[in-house]
Picture 1 (cartoon, helix red, strand yellow):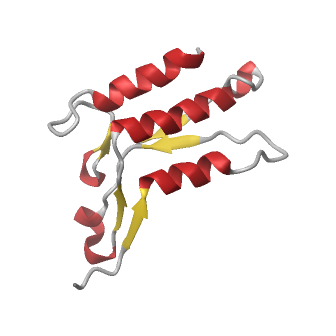
Picture 2 (cartoon, rainbow, N blue to C red):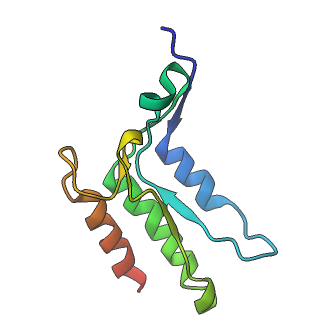
Length: 113
């Protein structure tokens, strides 16, 4: 009842990020895994809901599809984060999804690369 933070729908965050129009400068896009910083921020934290390897894979496929159309020097995608365990965002295997996020990354890269 005392939670004052934000709850964000992962699917909506991915949609908004992917729909962002190109800028007049190189824009290096990124995707995130899950997110929940209530361990650090308590009742003022941000929680991402519906983050799964499948949703991450969809987002990353869209980013890879866009990146391969850029000049080679601009084909970068950032992933947040490799191992932020306190925030629940990590590419390393875990008890909930196993190697799901790693496999989703592999799969998304294999489609266009």
